Amino acid sequence: MKTIFDKIDKEAVNSLDRVLFGGRVEVVQSPSEAGRAVDYLLSQPILGFDTETKPQFQRGHSSLVALLQVSSRDVCFLFRLNMIGLPDCLRRLLADEGETLKVGLSWHDDICGLRRRGEFTPGTFIEIQQIAKEMGLRDMSLQKLYANLLGGRISKAQRLSNWEADHLSEAQKSYAATDAWACIQLYEEMMRLRREGYLIRVAPVTDPVKPMVFPDLEERAAPPDTTPGMPGTARKSAGRVSASRAARVKPGAEGEKAGKEKPRRTPRKKKTDKQNE
Image 1 (spheres, rainbow, N blue to C red):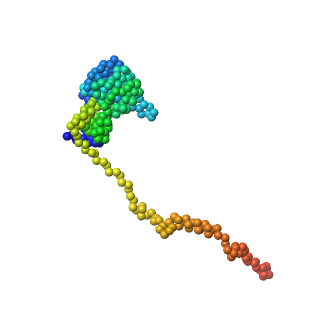
Image 2: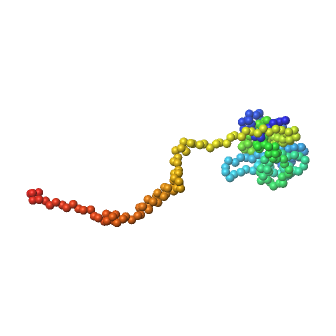
Image 3: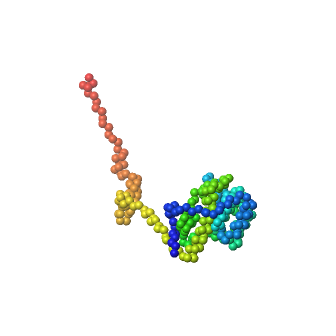
């Protein structure tokens, strides 16, 4: 029985060998080519779907889906939507309810992007992330799911490349085809594990950070006044009130008399005749 992890870390993924689609890749840049490709694809038992969009690095700007990649087990077609739009043949493929299984990952987001190119009613698609949740897995990305279930690494180096370029590079073609083909591989492995059984090893959870305690600061803090019946703050305020009241008390009679009495002047001595001389 196969053992898988509920979650896999990035270091484990990077240690695996890279996986690439080994079949034929066809770039579709005209509606007529798209029609022939769709006829072939709908004759296949299972298809993997994915999309690519040119990245935007300015806030408030977004691009339309530039590439729709659809793969069988052996052939992957890259439909350049930035050149051909969403022709009727592709809408027919996306709305198909026939016997061909159509598999995607986070496909709801892709559907929303494709419908910005043209309106259509989506057919039935199998969502890999939903199956992963039902299996008790916590990782939802294509890269981590593939590493966990199939033991290979899918490179994401081309994800932020220009998908609206005049000509796609070989690296872009390989990347796009691998993502669509990997959806088929994941789905078939998930179905096999469900039939034959599997064990899930739970990844260890990091202990939460405990709050830091500084006892020396607590010792230096002034202790509260513990006089019975009167907390420290109450005593201080009471003392201030008493002082203010004392300042407003009128002085007594003796105080008034003492306050009105003027200081005596020392009389000047008269000069004697001897001093005048």
